[in-house]
Amino acid sequence: MSCESPVIVWFRQDLRIADNPGLAAAAASGRPILPLCILDEVTPNIRAHGGASRWWLHHGLEALARDLRDHGLQLVLRRGAALEVLERLIAETAAGQVVWNRCYEPGAIARDTVVKAMLRDAGVGAESFNGSLLVEPWNIETGQGRPYKVFTPYWRRLRELYRPPAVFDAPDVMLAATEFPSDALSDWALLPTKPDWAGGLRESWHVNERAAQARIAEFLEEAVADYPQDRDRPDRAGTSRLSPYLHWGEISPHQIWRAAAPCLDADAAVAKGAEALLRELAWRDFNHHLLFHFPRIATANWREQFDGFPWRDDPAGLAAWQQGRTGYPLVDAGMRELLAEGWMHNRVRMVASSFLIKDLMVDWRDGEAWFWDTLVDADLANNAGNWQWVAGSGADASPFFRIFNPVTQGEKFDPAGEYVRRWVPELADVPDKWIHKPWAAPDGVLASAGVILGETYPAPMVHHGVARNRALAAYKAVRDRAG
Ligand SMILES: Cc1cc2nc3c(=O)[nH]c(=O)nc-3n(C[C@H](O)[C@H](O)[C@H](O)COP(=O)(O)OP(=O)(O)OC[C@H]3O[C@@H](n4cnc5c(N)ncnc54)[C@H](O)[C@@H]3O)c2cc1C
Image (tube, rainbow, N blue to C red; front, side, top):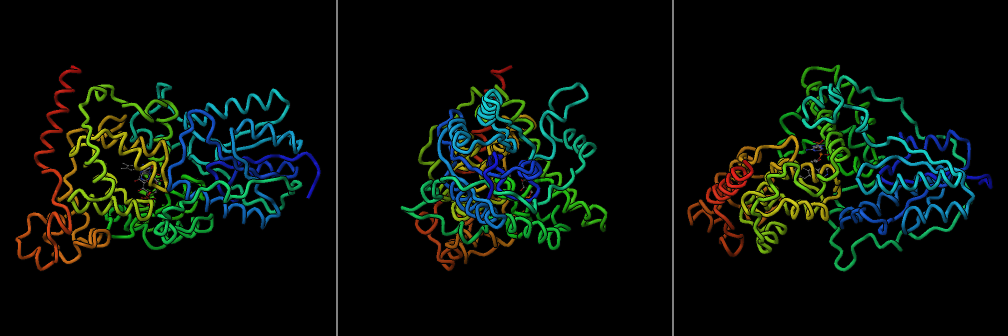
């Protein structure tokens, strides 16, 4: 432990030691390191964490504290407005520098800009780094020098431009600062207690850096060759499930790219799968690119014609959707998976969000808010970006008239109904032919499967065909009015 003026490493969405440029810079300075995490629920325009995010953050910090302790460092936890917390800690510790990895949400950018300026004015060094994107939003632009609004050319350019940077290994030698008072993690009360709804999350996730590394290794070993097809199959373990680790930074996108790069030179199926994975990773970057350049898309329709859309006020419909009781098995399976695990398969996210927006005509922002509260990977850029994509109100969005049919989507992507049977056990004995449309099954079939519609499982809350026409008519009226 050293009494020299320390460097504060301010951890945020980068809860890892390896490939962490902020931490590596602090280690390279040779000064003692004071790792810090702030629970900032005070600074305006910072969206409060949802319940599932709080759960993840608790475990992420526990793991980070353990890993730092193995390097002889103590993670200090403080609560309050970030600038005030930093100023107080600098006064206590005589820290000469603060380093962090950048976040890209509008509120975080505004806060960090002020923090950087105030610290520098006070004669304290303040440096930020890129720890979570392949390419930062200001380092990639169209031929006309503008931000990209369409994904495919963005991806093409990123593919040309991007080279994984040199690895920032987990620093071996780090000098610890003197110990300073810290909140106890339990004081932050991030875990649910009454009720404790997190049992399914505990069973589903190991929240630490090593688990993220194990996941990418396993994916590349076992799933990558089939990823282009299987990524649409919720009944298979066909995707990496790395999204929460990427959001919270237990793994960096550069680490994923480096791990996947050798596959690009392997046999055709493996190379194609790896390319497809990197393309998805680029969607994550693209959503951050959009949010950075057009911050209003976090809450406002990108296409302003949607401002006049006649969203329905339907609290009962919203609640049935949230609880997985719409009567459409694929939608219900997804919504129940979300409640149980804090995660939902991407194909089912698309179908479930389309159902809320188009079949129920509930504003995408209500769905976005529910996902924000319940996803362990809740991420402002990806969540709003994808909700707007499905709504048709976004930048490079799916057109409004493309309305997912929850029955045919189920039949195509969960053909034997395994996914539905797992999450909607009251339909477990319904034959494959009817599993995605139990209301169409002959009475005898349902009776022998132990299903009474409206009692053991809901009847469909809307008729998809009718709801589809209603949504299209509303959309057409808005479009015609907008000229
Ligand atoms: C309505 C809706 C809301 C969503 N909200 C979020 C969210 O809050 N946070 C979030 O991380 N993802 C969100 N997604 C995107 C996507 O569903 C998840 O990233 C994906 O399901 C994560 O699973 P995976 O890690 O196994 O993905 P993989 O298929 O293994 O992909 C690898 C990584 O690429 C990124 N990625 C994949 N698909 C997308 C995508 N469509 N958009 C952006 N990045 C992508 C993720 O970081 C993912 O971990 C949303 C999608 C929809 C349709």
